[in-house]
Each structure stands twice: as structure tokens, then as C-alpha cells.
Amino acid sequence: MAEVLVRRLLLAEGGLYRELRLRALEDAPDAFCSSLAEEAARPLESWGARLDNATRSGIDCPLVAEVGGQAAGLVWAKVDGEDPGTVNLFQMWVDPAWRGRGVAAALLDAAVAWARERGAHTVGLGVNCANRAAVALYRRAGFQVLGEAYPMAGAPGRMEYAMRLRLGA
Image 1 (cartoon, rainbow, N blue to C red):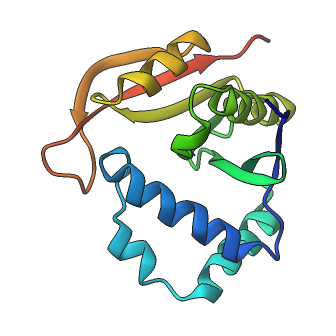
Image 2 (cartoon, rainbow, N blue to C red):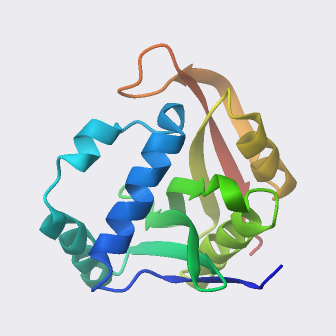
């Protein structure tokens, strides 16, 4: 298999970001708190604006994984608004054609590396309890479940775990 390259999404890649996000929501609607209909209704320029805001904020890191020049996955890392020592992960998704080939681990490694570079002490995320593969991925990376499962915001009937990774000093 070709090498997995993980890089930041560029300002001009609003269309790519939109494509990946919509593919994720179509593929795994139960994994996210947003819906395909909600996200598809956003105007194209809003996707570029999100990336522009991320670049200017300094607290957001949208990442894309590529294999052989083909976009294979996405994750968004963001410094927590209440605790600047915590980075939260959102929108983690790998195209089904690339699952089981190290793409998710490469995305996760890059997001955690960004958190370390920022001096974060914790990386957090929420994961649908029913997504056993994702829960297993995060556990292998050292994340631990915090407390009991709770209802996913905006997703009636779905439960999620809060998971945290403590970063070394």
C-alpha cells in the first residue's frame, strides 16, 4: 500500500472539505451529531469560510489523509474553549475503501502530535458506543472511557462515550 500522508486542509480546499464531510455523513450517519441534509444545505462558500476561520483562529487544525494522492479521511482537532490544555477531536472519518490500512491511526497520530505541539495535556473526543471499531482504535492509542455512556447531542436514541488521552509532561 502507498504511504499515508496527513496534512492540514488548505484555505482553497473548501470543496474537498465539503466532499469529505458529506461522504462521511452519508457513510456513517450514526457516527456524527450533524446530518447529511444539514451539511449539504450549507452554501459552498461556507466550507471555505470554515477553513479560513480555522487558519486564522490558531486553535483549529483540520486534517486530511491522502493515499496515493486520493483523499482517504478527515479529522478536525480544536483547542477546548474552556480548557486550553485540552484538544478535542471531531469529524473523524475514513473512507470505507481505506479502512484497516492505517489511515485512521495516521490521522489520530497527526492530531495528537498537533495537540502535543500546542502544549496540551489532554486529547478528548466523543464516540458512538455502537462504533466498536472506532472505540477499539482509540483504546489502542491509549484513550480511556470517562464514566458512563450518555445521549449524543442532536442524535435521539444514540449513546456515546467521552474518551480522553493524557499526554506526558
